[in-house]
Image 1 (cartoon, rainbow, N blue to C red):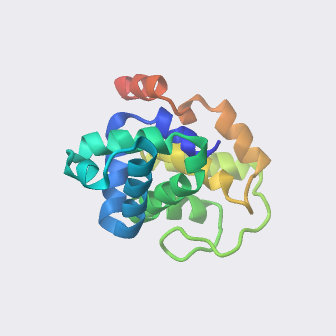
Image 2 (image 1 turned 60 degrees about the vertical axis):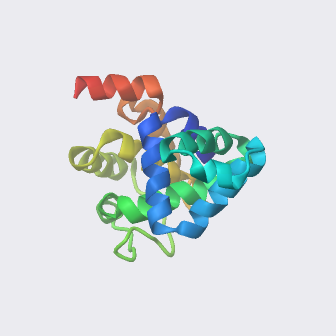
Image 3 (image 1 turned 90 degrees about the vertical axis):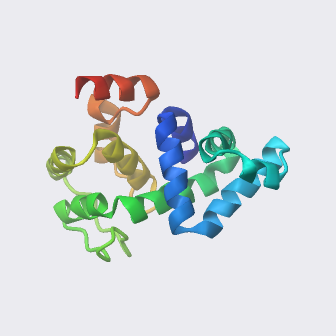
Length: 176
């Protein structure tokens, strides 16, 4: 799943949360996203920055939801995950016995773990972290060039708990 498609699927509050987190942790990356939004929508950057952040971020979502925004979209999601969801990233990597830097960043990936090990690691994550966080992370994780594991792709496409979409998110939150 391309990262630009996630912007269309996640709830409005998440768009705002992700972009706020990026603004707080990597101002340069946030500025690039705002500059791109400004150019693509034909809005002066100063005017865009004068808007309330939630409104600005919904406009950015429109631009980030385009296929041409894949590269920056990937950077934004990665920044958000590493800076705000590191314990989840580390828990996944630890469950799979993949060495990392303590913040969830991996230098080199080994062989694909067995389907049983992947399912066990997934269950651990879902027991400790919000379903949507896990779903987004695992989709992005499987997009890493050295990963692309078939077993994980099967889990992602077959497990209803990992479905990303406004309707499935709202339904899952309503169920608790």
